[in-house]
Structures are given as C-alpha cells and as structure tokens.
Length: 91
Image (cartoon, rainbow, N blue to C red; front, side):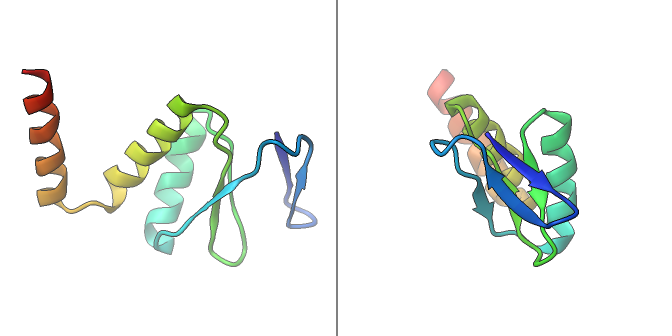
C-alpha cells in the first residue's frame, strides 16, 4: 500500500510490492476520474504536475480503473463499439 502526503507531495511506499500507476489523461478529465475512483474506494492521488496516480492491487481494481477512464475519455462511437462487442460475446 502507498501513502500520499499532501504536505510533502510525495508518495511513500509502505509495501514495496504495490506501486502506484500513473494515468495519462487530460486535466479536465483527471478530476472527474479522480473523484469517481475515490467514490469506488480505489486509492488515487492527483499531483501538482497534473498526473493521476492510482494504486491497483487487484484485477478487479484494474478493470474498474479501465472502465472509469474509458467512461470519461472515450468517444461516443468508441463506447458504442465496446457495448456492441460485449453484447456479441454474451449472446
């Protein structure tokens, strides 16, 4: 687990086997993604340099992060294509 300190603006690693991932998205989308991940209890931090750090500890957390990022960054056409692919796989 990593711990973010707003005062020192550093990420301290408490367990070396878990490292935060840096997600490259626009600053506009970053805050929406950040708040949604917080609501879903996914540890994440926005740094002063504009990067969004996300701690992914499980496969389900990785899927959630991908889904949230996709929700805010994908075009309508991309989302429709993705949904159609899901329906084809199910039925």
